[in-house]
Length: 448
Ligand SMILES: Cc1cc2nc3c(=O)[nH]c(=O)nc-3n(C[C@H](O)[C@H](O)[C@H](O)COP(=O)(O)OP(=O)(O)OC[C@H]3O[C@@H](n4cnc5c(N)ncnc54)[C@H](O)[C@@H]3O)c2cc1C
Image 1 (cartoon, protein in one colour):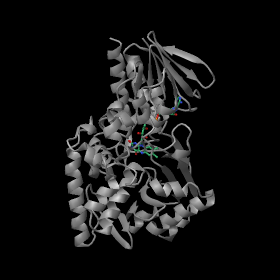
Image 2 (image 1 turned 30 degrees about the vertical axis):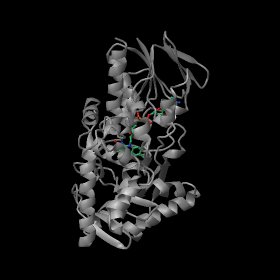
Image 3 (image 1 turned 135 degrees about the horizontal axis):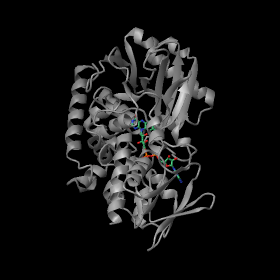
Image 4 (image 1 turned 135 degrees about the vertical axis):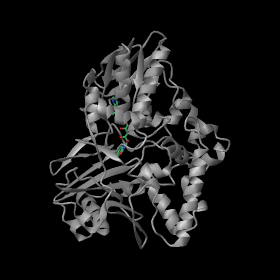
């Protein structure tokens, strides 16, 4: 059997490796001049930083196994010493970096937040991540935005603000962008909301020494990957399938794996055209909006002030920060996320204003020294032709219940893979790798 995999992100590479190991003749066709897709290596002050996907965390078993198999190592996110800063409105609170720790707000806000988290957790556990649309109250959960639920369930401004910041941090979208059912699905797919937000025993626990993109680069080493070759058309008939590249070349195969985010998959031409249901799905799963910004300093000075470099705030443009200094702490590097509605406004500012706005946010959290950065780097993922938004796709109200069953099944000889297709760890590197493996099995079984 011969298979063409479209896209050399983690999902495409994972599918390709498994297929090649099963004896399939294989070519991976990648639009960019590099592999890794939403993983990209960058540098600031000569130190590697991840411009895209970064952390591995509890339960990301395939990723940890890959890291080991590929001769790489991980190191812990700076979290043990110093406190996380939470700033909601005029209130500032310092919290330990322990999983599930909540800010010391006033007792009413604290009780409100605790009951909101508990209710969300209970509801999330009732959703089957393999088929969210099958929930007995699916129509109701999918017929409202997450924002409506937050307003109805949380009674204090601080409680609501906490959920909104958490949503932006997790989805790179606003609570009004997604359906409640999607928020629940995503939480249960990734263990729970506490895991998604946590560093230790959570989704932000470890980084790959040298950068996460090394995983993709080493996975690709034994594969036939054609770089700088965007695919424009996917065709199939009774006897086989093929892809046509932007330069007009046709690459024939028995089956095609399209390992792109669903929105980009929907922008390819298909011959014959996809079933209406599947095409309409891809019209309704937008990517989030996120830019990563980095500022470098001679030392991680915030550590001396008892801060761990993590901030969560309801005032932008940067609302979430992390300390991403190298393991030896030889320079200080702050990472600031600009997400959701904040990113949509910020990305339209001129470069100088964007940088000033980011550094102003850092100053608000870590003091005047944060204005004195020696270098600044930013990466806006929605500007990327072959990504057009991150971290991943989210489902707006009504989409899971109307179109959910169209997401994963192949269409004839065309199969789908990507972080958005994963049942477990959806949206994460772990989900991408698992989805690739699932699709490889599906292709092998389809071939008999
Ligand atoms: C800023 C940011 C932070 C993130 N943080 C984390 C994190 O900390 N931890 C975590 O686990 N995950 C994180 N993620 C998510 C993670 O990076 C993704 O889930 C994962 O990398 C997706 O892999 P994929 O293979 O599904 O998709 P992609 O990586 O998007 O792969 C798709 C590939 O297809 C290519 N392509 C697109 N169009 C075409 C075409 N027409 N023809 C041929 N090729 C094409 C693309 O160039 C790309 O290489 C983050 C993502 C971003 C952007």
